[in-house]
Image (spheres, rainbow, N blue to C red):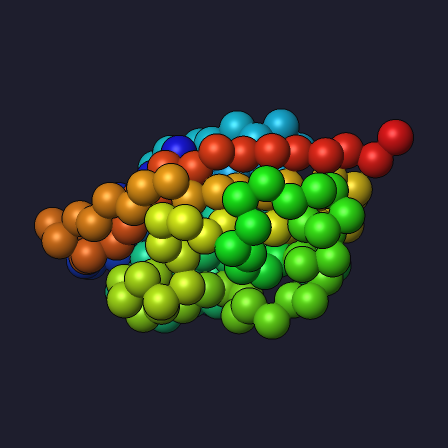
Length: 154
């Protein structure tokens, strides 16, 4: 699951353009597929997919691939091969970060779609969205129920 971060209406950019306090961040570690909830750290590089909503606009608002050399893209293929997913990720036509407006209107990520992600450190990840939960009381953010597949280079 990729839960929506907890929205705090009074959170502010602390001056770096990448950190909002006291905003929460949901992070997905692309190396081991672990999820950290309501974290305060927004990784700006490395194998991370982050999800944050700061009322004071910051660089990482939305769903952001922190790995500047990595790529990601939307797919409608539920069970791609590793090569198909890597090739889809490399097309990289998806905005990074995926803007909050596109999250709220469900125009990019919805049930029956997925993300193919290629990290510069090697893994290719397929996140297939099986369910989307809308939370009007949390700035209308989405929580995504996903199945994850990871292929690591040998």
